[in-house]
Image 1: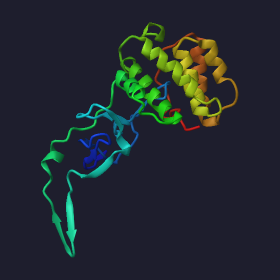
Image 2 (image 1 turned 135 degrees about the vertical axis):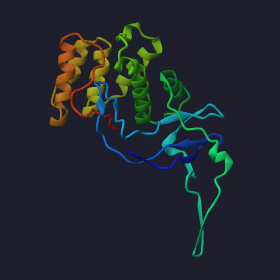
Image 3 (image 1 turned 45 degrees about the horizontal axis):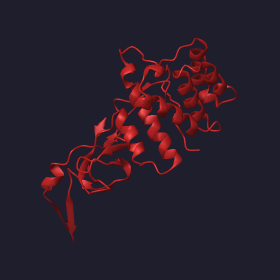
Length: 230
């Protein structure tokens, strides 16, 4: 992985400055993929989808924030001469954007950050993934029936946002149902044809549901069902 220069972005609500890391090149070697669609590649890190502003405390979409420049290369050109400008002190002091925790994702939804159905689905998926994060290592699985009401409500709301006509969304809904221990409903969501490249994922989810297993599991192939817009 080759890391690029930090970009300086402005909060769209109050203009406060933040840093956004960039990657010039990377790869997916050693990537992890899980039944809930979460994936992680240590050699290809991605910036947070959203972040909370450190000044006004409101959430904003990191990729949509205005980019003011790059921290390591502020250059001005005049005629045939190129002059490197000094980096403003407020740029140097800008904090890096940070992803929310599970409660933060749900708060962003409550604040109305999502303006469209696709955006709400993405935020709810991220909240789901974050809630499952402790169980991707050594923490014993806690069923959704024993989790906070907000987590259960989010999973139910997510299911209504997944289109049965879109294959990856179908898989995500089936997984959400399985994690709720609604195994028969999960099997019903998996019924019918799917694209060949996703069939192995469906087979994995089906086998887990038939065994009455609700916990999130790591998949065995380096591919994942990613949510797509309907």
